[in-house]
Length: 172
Image (cartoon, rainbow, N blue to C red; front, side, top):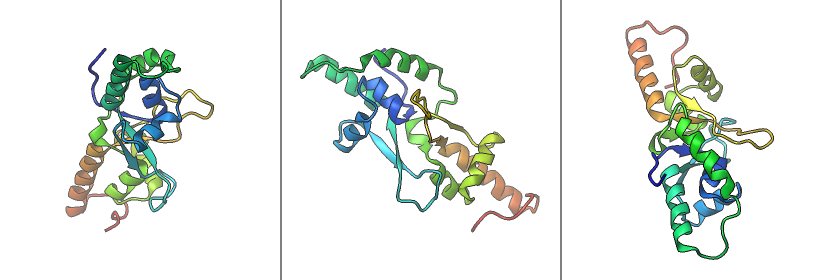
């Protein structure tokens, strides 16, 4: 599988796709070897702590280029790549890298408290997914679709403008 869709990945998914240890993905992003983007976490929209979302296409390209070049020693975690590719093929909902944001970003976009974002996800009003991470505790982040948040924001604004939205107005 040489060409894959450009999905948004968590750190473990990105590392497994590249065949490296799960701590390596962040260092590869910092050195400019793969594409990634910092997102606001769920704890506090003003928090300085952030998490990274990686580009599946960039991670796959890095793996293929490394494999062809045969530079240095072989990657030690390549055994996770097949499972990562199978899981990415089955990923539902598939959130594109360009469309991915964090819970804190979604809260700012929707003009709600970050805890309300989880309620909107549970109600099916916005789309999110938890990245694959088989380590103890699993993934502690959610990757949210920006387009689903924007659609919800437009829907709520329309309801507010005609006075049919239940509950309080969203923050200004």
